Length: 438
Image (cartoon, rainbow, N blue to C red; front, side, top):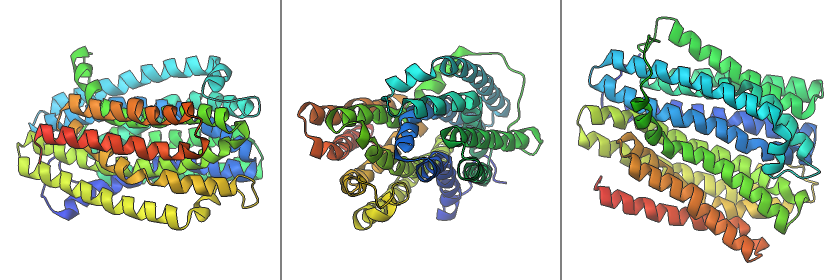
């Protein structure tokens, strides 16, 4: 087990943190993607659209987890870097208790209003039944979604990043097995997909709780007193990554409404496919950023600016390589990707292929911006991180989409992401230059 400090500047050490982080994020997003594949093949395209309409709620759960977990991990890393072990444990335990309370409130609210929420998220007469059913079941597992993610992040700070990959991997296998059983064998449809996802998250939670309760971890649960001042530091530091997750949900909501307006409800499966691909790409980029963050934060605690800059540059390099590969595949062989979710005989197949080619061009600038936002957060520069993330997710990208919607440019709506991401990248580079971090 690694000690909670930066042992070296080698690529091996860097990848030891980044690869498990990326793998965990990919597997974390794979729950939703696997649901989509099984629902599409076992139920139908409209059911796929219905599940996709529900995804903003999953983004809210993940965003809540990220909002609390990223800031907590940063403060705990700072404390561990200074040798303040007891303080780190109290912050950790305080966040866990807060998550349980917040998750209980979310579960109660959504279970009572799942159908109105489905309509708000963009469901129509053809999809509302699928969406409300998925929402109602998934909300019962809210605490599992939020707390399992928090513990997965804290495992990295604890010095055992490889366990994050193993824990999420176990959960992913549970989800795949239950999806097959519930949807393809027992024909439980969307209900089965939601139940499989929830039970998989429960498995992840049990895995990570077992680690922190086993006595093998460096961080342990400890008696504490609530200090709101801790959350005043935690929340701003988590906004960057939280807004990435909420942005995905917000954009899904906007795209569903815009597509219904310009193309009709029957065209919603086109964006459903793009949303699943984009989720996977975003999680890879976010995994690179999150793998970098503990190393940068620990280097801040050790007052090692050269190491800080090194980790940023290595993260940029990884994003460029991964982004180039992903975009290349989406441009050269989009049909193979679309075929995972839509039948080749679907009337929407060719339209989805064309849409994915246009949308994929946004992935590379998006990855660089995500790393920059995470980097600012790891430095403790919450203002720059929040400005970049919030500006990207809730101003620049939506503005590009809404302008094209107002112009009635149905053939151009898939280029809105590229326009918004390029504007966001420009903002990120300006902030990087102003902060003089290179």
